[in-house]
Image 1 (spheres, rainbow, N blue to C red):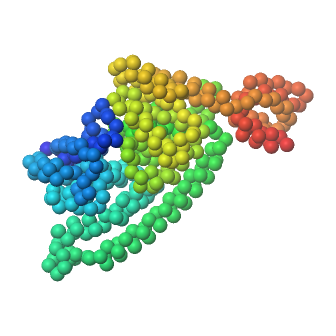
Image 2 (cartoon, helix red, strand yellow):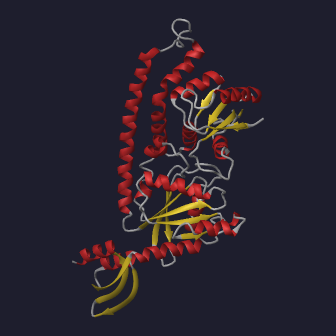
Image 3 (cartoon, rainbow, N blue to C red):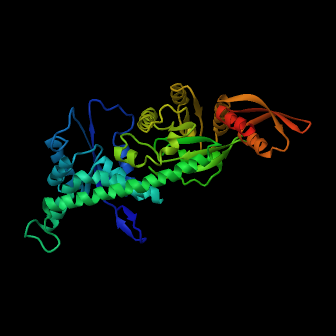
Length: 428
């Protein structure tokens, strides 16, 4: 018997789930079991997988997505395995969900609903909880009829049920829709206020170079953040362990400080509602000077994972930001040829193991070299009493040479064009 913990510390039997996948003509071939990722998502949500079923279809069935024969086969398997619910690896329309639940006589959860449930489970900060609630409501809106169908089955419709269980009809559904629309407006307003505060915080860091870690969920971004900065970033071997942006100061070998941020992991077919709801959180990625795209090089579908991340970067407007491909978990790669093939697919690539520390110095050197590439060399003659400008030049630039002459400090400095312009304005 599989058990999971509850909030009060007691144990309860985990829900038993049948996983169902559909392979279409345009779906990419994977080395991993097509349902393996769905199984990990299911286990992360706290359910036990008791069966897996696949079907190939050229196009979805209008009313049930799956073919009639496959639906009956799933129903029989669910009965034999005493399953509580059926989880599909595709997104279903409200009508398809209702029809499948009627035939299977069990709850049906599609991929988006499962991911939303995991996000709700892992949300810790106020912002993350607001973002998850917004995504859940947007997913729920077109499915209100299905929810009321559940209540009607439990208590009856019309005058046949007991007090508090009679069917609500169209009027109640419309009332619920108005309530949810108002809640969406309130959530968006509150998230916009949070986004403004985050932008002000980001503006306070403008004098520092910013680097953002992105990658497929469980690629090892948080472990790499800890390895590079020595921070206490939360690490767990589960999908979507990190939902909130974690930003830490990172001291490079030349003494320069950059800000390194780690945020929510991506996944193939990441629900649109989540991308839209987490737009404020992903601001760290969009505004970064450099992106470190972390890939689990030991995963058999590493290339597909990298493509999924690049698709999300395109959707949030960060596709043109300079990036370095970081092939992580190199200590788990059995065939070195796999690493060479992956490394050859991108111009800027570094092989690392965040767990053992291998390649971490090389990655830091790559970031340092990138920073220097965007800088220019210039000379300054600064009055010795102008401590503000001298401090700015030392903090923002790399001082290559320093000499003193009759109350002046002569500096040869390498710095970015933006910082150079600021220094010249300070001197004027």
